[in-house]
Image (spheres, rainbow, N blue to C red):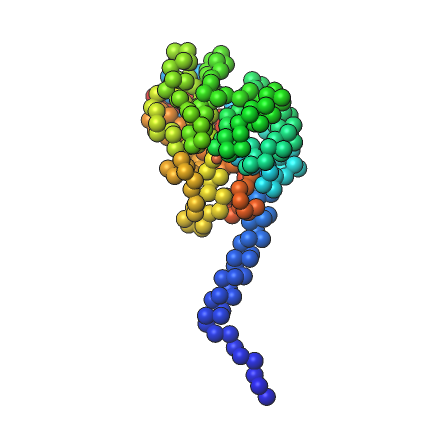
Length: 275
Ligand SMILES: [Fe+2]
């Protein structure tokens, strides 16, 4: 009787690797559908104490034309509204390249109910498919776009530089135009330009763009980091009195998979610390 051939060591290794890859891929399809709320305490020194107690929600990198989920987005908006935040900041990359998905996306983003307002900046993708589409879609839904522009919100100001990769940012000019003596929040799509300025009046920069890597390896982290997200990938960073928070994003790009890097909604609160 002829016995079936046992698997060789190499066949076992290849088979195991394929099974692990298939399992990870299947899990990645599930992970991308489950957003996490990250609660962040952001320190502010006495100089910027006017921000203490303020709460902001941060979302971005929707890439809604790449397997965006209406139900997940509606759940995230409802979750943000239940937090009673002062501001909602949207960090850009609303769609990857198909502007017809902007209207269904922004119709849901229009449901945010922050105490002060919802502000948005553009990402590199919003430039690559033509900025006029995103500008029009946001405006139609009452979402204020900051494009090398700022807003004086009373106790503090907010600034929105243009995309550092695909646009023409002017951060030093933007800062110089703002009222002296008020703390600032910078909303900038790409995180690495945090190193391009050092004004201590900027208490916080919020960014996205990195997707947190989107696919991460255990004990290693982000496998791929896009241009201008090489130094700062996810979470809270500090440089002197300035803070940078990098949101992992809400959607996916290219592959409909996230691994060890779930979609994120950030709820950030400023806490004053002694100088
Ligand atoms: Fe981006």
